[in-house]
Image (cartoon, rainbow over all chains, first blue to last red; front, side):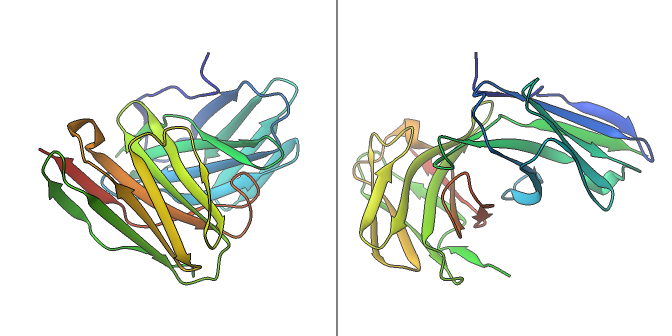
Amino acid sequence: QKEVEQNSGPLSVPEGAIASLNCTYSDRGSQSFFWYRQYSGKSPELIMFIYSNGDKEDGRFTAQLNKASQYVSLLIRDSQPSDSATYLCAVGSGGYNKLIFGAGTRLAVHP
Amino acid sequence: DVKVTQSSRYLVKRTGEKVFLECVQDMDHENMFWYRQDPGLGLRLIYFSYDVKMKEKGDIPEGYSVSREKKERFSLILESASTNQTSMYLCASSLSGPGASPLHFGNGTRLTVT
């Protein structure tokens, strides 16, 4: 079992829809959770981070964390073609001394 | 804004060459990292440094070494490049440890070893 798992996609959604990206992790002691966006040929850039159970909203993005079920998700409302990218989930564990990335989910938003 | 600058965007080297990848950050971050990214494998940590002259092995350190003589600069060295080191290399910095604060990435260096 991989430590951080994401569906590789592509996840295809129409413009204006909600895109839901999911990530599961194996270390129950994980404390921090990050979502990065990576456009093709570019480096990852941080979208959001979340430390506590529940939802965290920032504009069109909402991160949801459920530690009991060991999953974290990213919702993108009103998806735009410019949101088409690979989304990387990263999980911090080992007392904040380790960060493990998932392989990423490719999102395609079509007009 | 944090700026992390990698010296080369593209590099082509021959098998057996010694290769230096340079990274500089301008935000006085203590922590710096080198990752490689390969399709289907995600980002894998090669080395990180939490202070000048301090380094820690990541998940895949074999075939690599690092140098951090100044706080702002972190270099990755391929002692004898091999074709399986063809990859995208990403440098990053952060205020705190790997899992404690967000990473700020450079633009990446795409290395091809022939």
